[in-house]
Length: 222
Image (cartoon, rainbow, N blue to C red; front, side, top):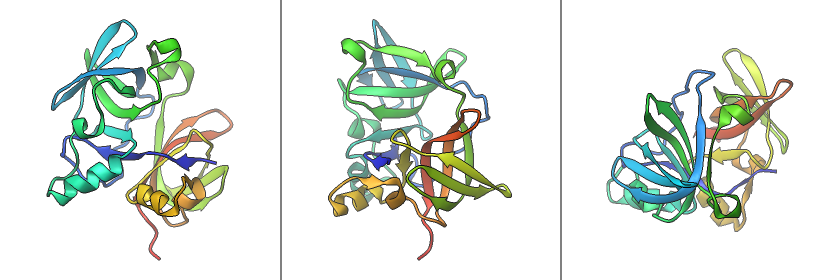
């Protein structure tokens, strides 16, 4: 069962915690780099990947998943800001995994996720997601049902059935607070319920569609 560990926030105080995320075209080449943050500015983050530095542009479309990000977001909003700055959530020297797109030589960070280590054996590596798994796709709709192993979403006039597991991440406003109040991590059935509006990022594995990320844009009305 998937346990919600982190909270995702947009960075640079340019957008609020509200989804859905704009879906990219199917087949978009998303790459991943894993390493250690070596520098940050208001519009970029530099990550040391193996023996080289990689500089990524960040903007209001960049998502950050890190422990404590939800608290930082609430603090920023209390000060009248739309969201926290990247440097409020990610620190220099921290190990991260960056999902990015090569925009003709300019690297745009779509997602920055805090990880336990920079890589096996203290090293780092850069790899293309398309080399190890199908390109990420997106589907938006309303949760029809959810269980420990599957999620059914109704959208576009049909039902989409996704497999979920310990690699599935659920992102949404209030989930970190709910987990804190419970005193333990949330399962996917505790994080999602029928009627929730969601956007699912998934990989088509041939016979199944695996949900990598489920973003909650609106909770079902009580």
